[in-house]
Length: 312
Image (tube, rainbow, N blue to C red):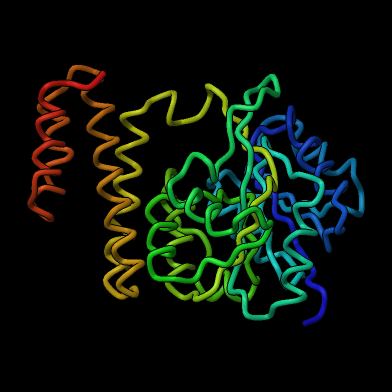
């Protein structure tokens, strides 16, 4: 296979404070990006002006504010590379992020897409942890890798676990542009969990996934996120997105369908916890009750009782 050409898509909304850092992290890659596409999603600050200052290395696409999914899809539509990589404007890439994927793609044409590890950091730069170590699916792949940087995810169990509790965020995803377009990109009309919606559809059509067991970038944890501002609303939106995904999952391979079901159970439980922490115990129990009806058993009964008792 020829060397892949990466189009890096950066959706940005009122991102003047962080956009330059994100762009610089792409320009500093040891494997140069084919292009950087910044999509200004109707910002009211200097986001567009900052992108323009870079000149030719950065292509600027401007649109009315329509949300991150529309912005990512618009960037993909404008892209001319054969592979897509994504980066949110408040996060940044590790210097070898593109190289670690590009060299593997050039060596192995059988990879459907690639992902990898990343770091969680606070606004002061403090390391809070790494994704693969904090997710069961990620720890399983680290064990399988046995110290190697590359490991392939390909068994039914591995793919189901990845959908249920995925360790690779959007900024670690590398996907052929043609496949992204064929799948319809990110779903419209959803504000939370849109990345899982796309990822599950991608996994449903994949057999071999390349996983790089090294940090490919940084995900910034900050208090302004939707989940922290209004956890109940965010978790309700999470369940709404996954409800649509479950409808589509009826046509997925059985392992991926099982992963989606596990993801929905966890989302309902998280919604219940958010409600219980507000003292709304009956509403919390109702949030997890559908999982008990779908899969009767002690686990579901325990979830309902824990919501009625309240959670810490």
